[in-house]
Image (cartoon, rainbow, N blue to C red; front, side, top):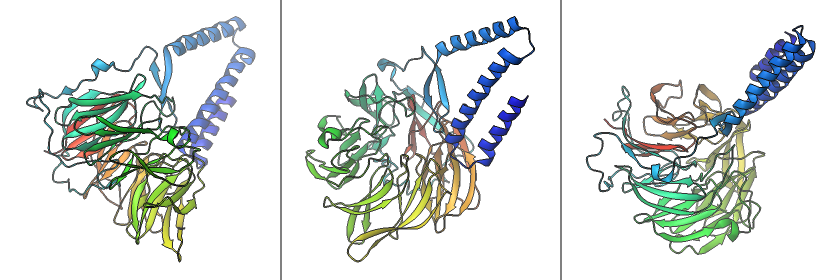
Length: 502
């Protein structure tokens, strides 16, 4: 009784008293549970008043059952809050020949030829402007009374890459055995139009296997960053390899602990990507047409956040949220214009939100928090100054969005809205896990970690769900893609295409 009471008190402290990230509470729960179980076992064997032989026999039976079960199960991954995900050992990933689209009856009249639908393009990570913002009103186009029509679904290999779409071609990356695969699907039918493969494999029980970067489409080309640093340029129509670089080797670097995840940034005729960990450069720029290296930017620590482009005054800058800091580089010269220490000892993943008045909003998970940062040139050098810093938004690897002076995002897995000028929390409600957001003109699309799709009002006063449905099974960290009226979502097991309108 004393042990169980102590366990209950410890749980109350962990979950109700200590202010810490949810993953820390989960780890503490596991440790306390193991200690309690060990102490209960000692009590049962040595101090209980049950007959001695019965104590040891029952303990041996329980131990034996636990051993048998453990031989049948394995940890196949963890959630964003570090909760183990168990699977049967004999379960295998789908074979290559099984990666074929299942088409909803009546959705496509003829899939013998690609349909190549003309749709709104979604050519890069987080949408056309790389900031979650979609310039489209949708409230009068969606039917919130019923789940949208599913066009097709297909089994997928591992990886956390999202889809990008242009001209009816939908491109993503996946892991297949010891190869990373860039796959191009026909948006209308789910047919594979082409695939490009190369030898590479990133594996991690905690982080998951396979490529984690979303491709970028520009000038008829597909730019893909593999998990181990393979930067590939492919022809969008044919899949032909135009050029390839291993950026780790180019820069004498190493692969970041959790693999390469930033999406390539294409500006005019240049491709800009992180260079890896502990190398000679922080970022590197390649010529889009021939792959020649144009410049290497000064070293900063590696990051899992994607670089963005900003026009600040007369200066075009590349903004990069790296591990422990924020930096701005001159787009046209290999110069570091400014750097701000952030102090995070954990990966910084969420892409900074660029505001119209030379300010940035940044956020980190693991209990770190968020900040509003102002950028000024004083008089000849750029300076970054923190206007405020708080813990009202802690985005672990979810990306946030802004609208009319408010930030919306997943604060340690719970949907929240904060006021931008001071960082005051407006509301926090709805555990969706570590998913992603797209912000339309009059509604938010949220993809939850558990595979749910949620339409929400853009409302700073209260959270209001318009519609939700279960789309995917299993952990879903991949960012969504909306090439209106089509929604493409996936995880490391399958991909689904929905028609949202009607």
